[in-house]
Image (cartoon, rainbow, N blue to C red; front, side, top):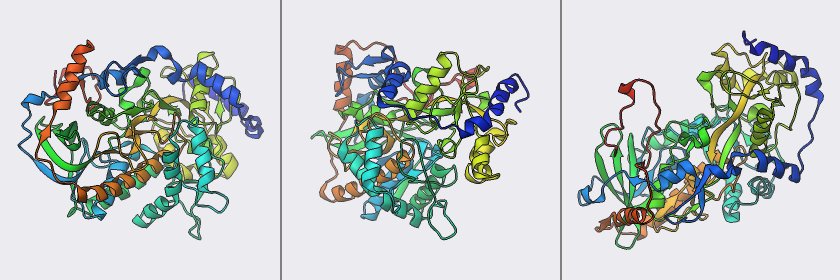
Length: 545
């Protein structure tokens, strides 16, 4: 057991385990879901949002933390940047080295394009790497892309752009084959058939997984494929894009880059620019912990917005219901939905199964918040939470299932003396996914010419709630689509000689007119954490103060 004050609370769960294992909680009605979301989901707390005063989405709501970055001072002074000194010249500039960025780079290189991939950390340091549970695709005889569409569109509260959802689900089977052919080691039965399971909100078993480190395995493969194309893809790491460059026609034609170690500024000129910078969990909206990687600070949204690109559903975030809530060392770490798809149920402090474990993520997150707020949560010295009864998994599927199917989960907790085969774990929602982002069409175009966006930095694919397994699918499907589209475009575009940052100056004027207050600068580049040691609290080299 836990060896502390939590043992008595865990015993209540153990005593009711047999009874709870037999109990199947009814699915909530549409009205019950709406009521739960309205009362408890973080996106519905009006005081946590503010109106944007400038930019393409002026007058719309955004989280307070994001609004500050979207309307902050630029990190550079345009008049001090020499746009005539070109450091990199390429056909396609890809900003971001995660699943979407590498997929885009690979497909663009297939067309003969010269590709420059810049990433502020290293290739693979991305939310793709953090994904665990799996990737959806309707490729079994009892399933279809049409059924997948209904699940995804409905799961997103019917807010997704239909053409994007259509592209997502119809490209899914071919994407699974592409990844498999590249070498992704999906879970398979002895005859080679891929193992598929349910996820929250899915009506069919279409979750393809690599145990519970699916994202890491997919990212490993895409990273290696990118490096294997060194003759076509140039990788520049530890380099953040801090501004889009436009030409005299207002078209994207490159980016201002900053080496995050030295602060040096570099200029990249390109025919097509693809933003694939991922999410925003490290903004810690409303003070929530996050499952996101270190660089997830909404940079892509900021530089696209300043360049004039419209956002969609920027006020919608996904709080994954099961983030680790104990011990402190793993607070916010993802406890994959696969744990619940294998049979573990959510239990309150009284040992009650209070909700179906495979309701959609926003519903289950709201349910956990309700239990805690109404006094049915488990009090502890890290984060009040509910139990996720993991020992049920081996009871349902046989001893050894946990070690075989979710070894990463076992390893994450056993380091702290918690054996998930024998005792339940504490969970609470963690900031997980950016539902909204830069608005795109089905070939990843924004309203800014020659600027494409793919992956989590885009908005519209998932509406205002995402189903498990559709994020890994999104980054690969639309990363590929962006690369394919850029591969068509670059042949018709000439490199511009008239580079401009006039839009940055115009943005500054708009800030002054709107009387935007504060000294924040953006893009954020890296999160700000205070370690208590002045040596570690120094500014990023080259950062504007």
